[in-house]
Image (tube, rainbow, N blue to C red):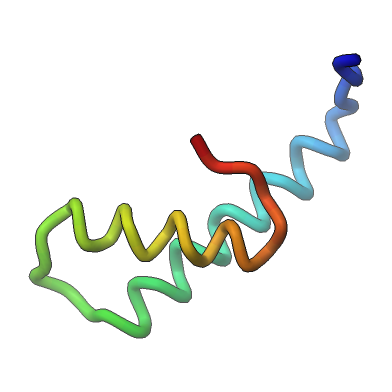
Length: 53
């Protein structure tokens, strides 16, 4: 069953995603292929128990 998300839910989710992206970039630094950042971001999001497809 799908649940309707409120704006505050979207705000929390957005903050989680952005903080994960910042963490990945801090750890890896600039200059890598996008696919490397993507793979690491997926792992970081999964650590936060977020579903990633």
